Image 1 (cartoon, rainbow, N blue to C red):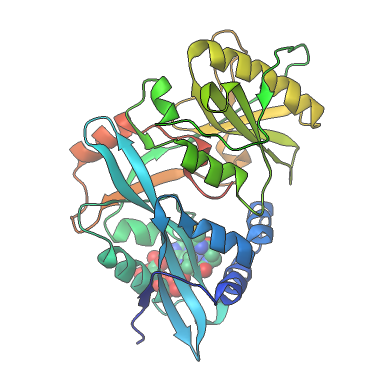
Image 2: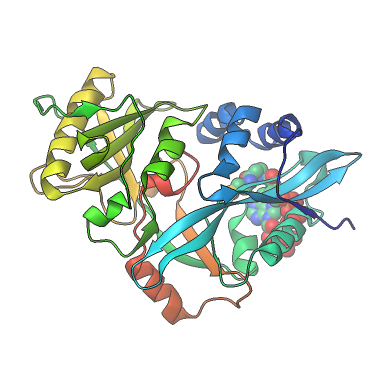
Length: 322
Ligand SMILES: CC(C)(COP(=O)(O)OP(=O)(O)OC[C@H]1O[C@@H](n2cnc3c(N)ncnc32)[C@H](O)[C@@H]1OP(=O)(O)O)[C@@H](O)C(=O)NCCC(=O)NCCS
């Protein structure tokens, strides 16, 4: 048996980790899209965010990583507890020849044990990792909904397309009324969307970059059907209306006839816009369930998970597959 090593940096070994991750992902169109992005630059970006450095539990053979699980820090805005730290379990992989030997189980246990007691640990697993996460005390908080609608051709609103960093103070999501969410300050949004080396996002802002009334971020995602996925939509009521209208226009310009959202509460809906239609499970690229636990604590009680379910506000930008 090999005990996993918990490391706080992969500096100098980015290529070896990128190759391990690329090897691990094959099969579906969704996995193939993720695989293309898994470059050394992408990992350097992802493992060093404004919230801090990621930690990894790793098993190596002859100095080469063969299994890993990563956790990246996030700042969670909790209406009751203020800002608290959370960790998102992100990359989970065991090299093909070493599967079925308990390496994922050991890496996950070592990683969670290394996190400070009391921190929130969350994960959006796939079908391969879900069972083991549940076995290790995670609980299912909420299934995210996929919704879609055609982009409207008559939309005319004009707001700014952001080409420079945002520079406002505070948490933009407080413009709405939300309980628990990943804090959307300028540092986070700039890192998440403008600094990402592998993906291109369109950032629409209503108002000035240093004092926006609202922000909408979307990404072209087109392996199956060209669609615009709303990553984040934050702002005042009036700003949201204009941003949604501009989104339709931008999506059309970019050749994207469909708009999609993935979230716990429907962010892309507004009374003045057509209702979004729920995407049935067989057409969803991946079942998105938020799993969570508190480091150092036993499995959350059903009362805790009901409270989380009620308060947790999630948009697609809260997870790392898009
Ligand atoms: C998922 C993965 C990391 C499992 O690695 P592994 O080292 O073989 O897993 P382990 O041997 O530690 O298995 C631990 C438990 O995980 C579960 N598990 C492992 N592979 C699984 C699979 N393909 N489907 C469902 N459950 C699986 C089992 O419950 C297993 O417990 P058991 O031995 O009692 O049956 C590996 O198959 C992989 O790299 N897959 C491709 C990448 C991927 O899908 N990553 C998850 C991203 S969220």
